[in-house]
Length: 480
Image (cartoon, rainbow, N blue to C red; front, side):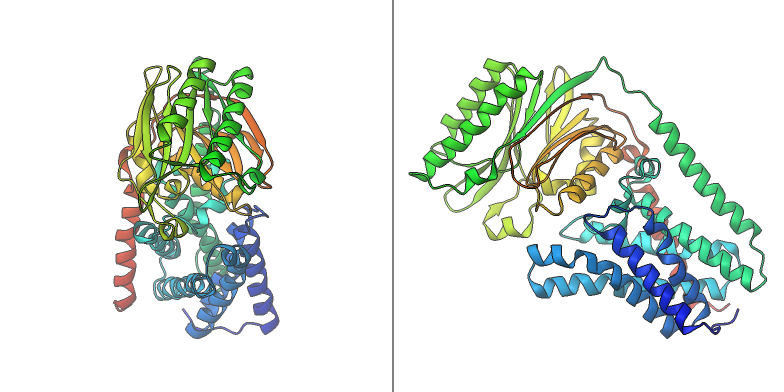
């Protein structure tokens, strides 16, 4: 096939702008438009097949860069400028290189199966990034699909990599169909395969969503955040401040218990405790758990001699400390604040069933949280702390771990979202605490583990993609 065909400059510019706007909306932390991701790459991939390699690289880079600009204001609020520039430019650069590689394969070989080149390469890139990035799965395009529940179910089979594959396969297929049709090449098989994959995906998702959870194994849970201004008031001494904050949270235990809550989950870093004052405050929470007959999950910053630990206490309704979890995955700010990471997951038993606890950033790490699914945890409790603007996205990233692992989740975030979701990623109850005002949320959730293929087989789909990506690289260097 021809390596270059004439394209109107106006049409080309319109296509790049259209792609950029669609990516901008899909990546946006506030727009939440999942559907634009499925059409954004179409003009870029189609024009790349009609243009020279240099032009294909240029339009791919420009279009994706426009889309990634939606994250710049957020990144500037949490990262220094040099890192913002690197993050903003490196992803469009890699995207453009992947487009060039996929373009070469689709132009060199006439078989319809070349349509898989782009999704295979892109999915493999994300998978390798997840394995070695200090930020885990942050930045995956799969998270833009959180509101598209039928497709979200694919994560129970293949992890979020399955969603990434679908979201890049569809536009690649449409672009190749249009290109082959214009060049009078057969498109019937490719069209049938494209429709078949989409129909199978939707059918699986709809069937899984139609399952009715058992009401017999449900539990009522409650969450609360206090007024964020309480953290900025002046107190007589540091210890008095922490006792005051602890009492504010303990007041909410009684409120939530009256609403029927059997488990109360508080947000991350409710207050700071030192080893000398820890027994007193811990006993206060134990006494409250006994008095109101509830389980309490309380997260504190535990001050040591020259470092901190980010911990989550799990206190039973009998007043026993049944888990004392230390956060394993830290964000950069915690590292700079001398917070030390833990090493192990925290599993415990409530009413004879296995449940678990993790903290905020832990949920960004797919392989780590998969361990809770492999342990057949019924529920996962997650104290968290968001950065206001990323509350929706960060909560949905965590929810995707539920779909992969087959467990329900209760997540309480300071300056973020309070969510209760089931094993299918369906948000059952939600409250918005972005503005730091006191927030309460109670709801009932199915406390039952649902096995998933992904929790059993792990990254089987990603490994297949990695092997296929190696074959793609071999095709690039092989003669036609």
